[in-house]
Length: 280
Length: 259
Image 1 (cartoon, chains in turn red, brown):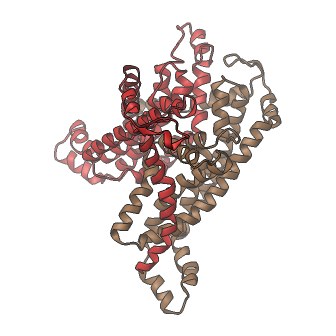
Image 2 (tube, rainbow over the protein chains, first blue to last red):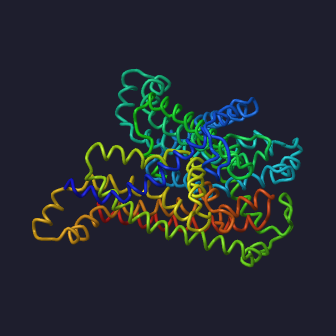
Image 3 (cartoon, rainbow over the protein chains, first blue to last red):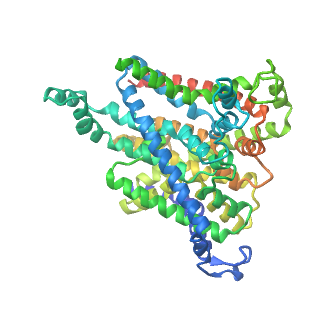
């Protein structure tokens, strides 16, 4: 049977060409400078990384992690109770509720972001409603507030679903036992339910934080250049400024920071987040 | 009391999730071009939509690429998964770890990395590069969907088929493939939805000659809000909704039969 492993060889070659080599190219360009179309002109340089350390760019990187972090926290605060409520609903309605949370993510990501664009714009629907109610105008778009809102809106279901999955698997008799032993609702929640749901929280955080920190669509459409994130910087370097060396250095920094955050998360919980990611 | 609070809370969250979509749909029938004002009912934006050649072309490329990349990545992914399962422990760990890279890496990194590769190889960005990129990010998901099914499969069934005189190809067709079919189907569905929905990786690898719907929506939205996008969103939402409901219904039935 061992020989049958050979049928994976073509894919292994494919993988090396299209997954490994491109990442090494990024690494290579991040440590060089010169004309990208002329290999002979390229020489070793740390200028790409030096540029990352310039204050304007450090601020952008800091903003990306801050906004992604805040939106992850908001998703957790809104999403955890939702997941609990769904998990405690009668089996009859549970699937309906779940489907209602999944349906919005079937809609194209760009369209969901676009929907907020038309809601939040200065003369948009939301402001008309506020004016009609005699309330002051909401002027968050374009800006960081709108980006944050867009992140929470787009990724909230990705927080709810993994937490729900874990909560629904908790053995009800464990909770009953806690009550029988004199634990009130708060104690039962803090000492039993919350610790048992950590794997769900961890994969929820990963599934919200990763796309949020690397997005350039949300910031591009809702931030209008006022709240550039690391994703916008990378996009600019590859598509408009054509500074691949700086763009590659930024990509490598992004990957390293994500690796570090994932390592921290997996220290909190050893479970594999991919399983959940794939389901959706 | 607690129940009422729960209801209100869920209601608010649903309002948050659905209000933008509903407003979008309602305003796709709005006669006035302004987003805030209702100027009467109209189908004009839908008519505009069907007249728009750019949108038709983008739709064509979106579907074409999704279909081709799903077929190729499902076949290649399934074969690769069968092979990976029979690899030595070390080989399997290495291959699976590399295979996971596009799943775990941010899309933007995968996108710029592929773009860098194509440009370095002097391949002009266009239909082919976009198709290859879609295959690149789809295969890992197919493998992740198929591999568990292969692991669950009873090894001896295939061996029994071979002992009973089946050629390896025949055993594959009649024994192994039917056994892992649920994994293959869910892998194909994931690949298809990922491809239809992809924006970031397409954006970097499509060049200027081809666009898919996501790229078109992005460039239209960057220029400002347009009622035709509302109409397009509504149509896409309805189509996806219907498709997913059909798939889910089928899945439910399939599970019933298995149980």
